[in-house]
Image 1 (tube, rainbow, N blue to C red):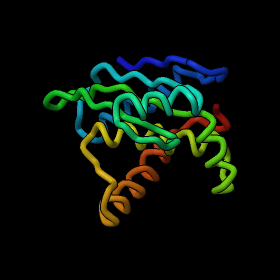
Image 2: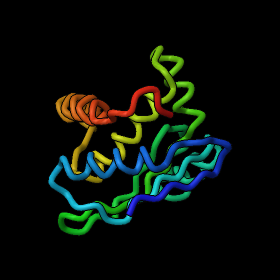
Image 3: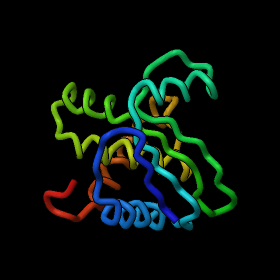
Image 4: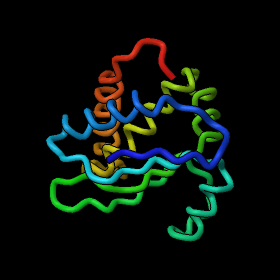
Length: 140
């Protein structure tokens, strides 16, 4: 089950995104378990980063992995403020960047890493592949 929680003022067509996330998980030959996306602001995510990871930095995403076996399960916290700023910096549309970050979190839950240059390249290729799976035209 895929759930969405909003800790900041933000709207999303959760049905379209839930279907897309389910297809991402299936495409990795995994089973959908409880996956929760929590959309928040910088302060909310910074608090999580300090409390659980002891990192005094802003970030766009933090993923907590609760996967067991082939079942994908976790909490994915996303700072809408960071996504907006990154979209501006990378000169892409907000929802394009949001899809990249959402796919990134699901890919982490699927076992992909991004600490080495080689792993980061694979992650970026997978993000692009998964973004391409979002077939809804002009969708939020």
